[in-house]
Image 1 (cartoon, rainbow, N blue to C red):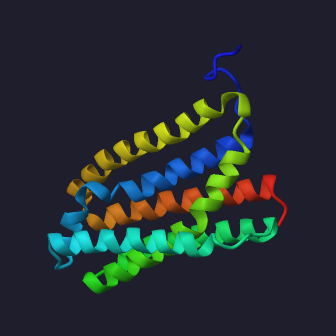
Image 2: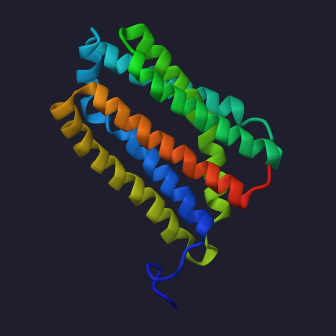
Length: 193
């Protein structure tokens, strides 16, 4: 038996976990200072809680709604790309957030993008795990996301304290764009649409 770290994982798996880790980083940079961001646009702690609640409830409801349907493989990939694009647009809208209502709308759009893309992504990742090392590869995925969230929290606080929220949002947009580009390469290389 080969040690799983040394065993070469397939390229599709590496594309997928790289893209998701970068998307986790993109969302994670604002998490530790989210309440400060909300206060900066005139909100308070209750508004921060409402915004996060709106995001999670919207994502949950739309995930169940969109994925109640059976997707044909061609449309599944288009839906995943579309979800990633909607998610990226939601992140770009953070640049225009000036009050609580625009924040709520941004949260809804970002949540809808996640709701469309994430379950399809999970299915794709599952299809590309090596069955012999499946548990370990899921551990890499989950642990990698935790690692990226931690790194994002540290860097997000640092970027916001040194350069402000505008620079932080551009960091989010850059990482989200890179994540989408990796997904597009994945689809082009491994899927026919």
